[in-house]
Length: 74
Length: 363
Image (cartoon, rainbow over all chains, first blue to last red; front, side, top):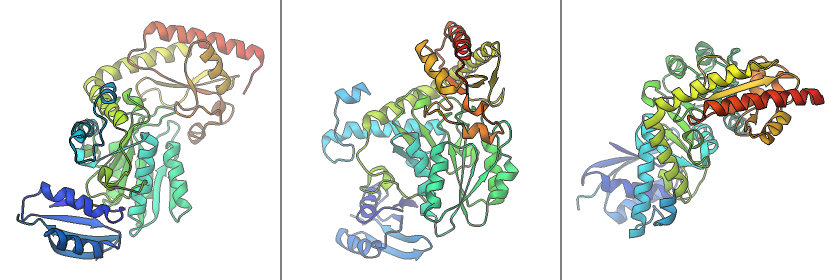
């Protein structure tokens, strides 16, 4: 799965990196997001809601957060 | 580089049409740098020179892995920008182990591995020592560290060897490689850090999403294109360049050793191509450098990148003491340096050393 490494960046940069990566995967496919800005917990769900992509999961892990975003079908 | 200056200088990060050519040039350079280090282009982060690349490796990897530990390992013969980056991190909680080296400037792989602790997050080593020219057995050093722990990040500083010796990220099994434009005969102010995907890295420069968020700020497109062209040409000509530079260095060493009181620093074999550092009895390196410059011979006291006369910490690390550590000068040849130029340089060195000794300018 494509990994979007946003570690060390501050929102909204992680969202920009995700937005760049999603067109590079097939509709319906997923990318993994690594981030350690705590605001990702707020911004990523909101961005997915706004853009129509699906936030499959977003979990805290040692050193940050790991999310999975599925590209919208159309 | 001139083509970039004369063409579109749009921001490669922009969406409009004038960004396309700069973006293509940026990605072409990224591919060239990746090919040079034997790795994937996605891991390449462009920087302002090799010093920033080393700082990004050391500070960025340490910072992004603090939840796993605070310990760093490096050797006693690293570039100042590695050693001082480690020291800077000590101010904010890092713990550092510096592994000693032998008389040729080589760390023992077993000792390097033994320095790795359970809380070590980074081992930083150099492909070659940039003052005395010692080329390290990077594969053996990486293998020893991996045998101790396979989850510790390994940074290899290749700034002294990029374009001169093969760099093989996958064979070495390292996680980060830093390079600069100098040894590529490219712009010295351009550099790059390659990071293996999955290696946690924080940026040094915060801001936007340039370079995948790992190095914010507008790109120095001219420098980056020069770095890419330098990488491509160096990769194509590496064997020829290295052979010519090694032969030239051997000729220079042979000539310099005909002068009384000159000592070659570092090993006689396994050196950076074209790299010759000597210490000269009875003179001081900085004075000799200035006098040689007046005679048309360009060299540096100590290392090539920082012309400040001081006792060499690298020479001290391999067991030398003053005055030898104060009287070192470094010659770096290119593959275009001719036998005549080398002969003239030896004659000028002999004459200049003789005059300085007669003047009583001693170390």
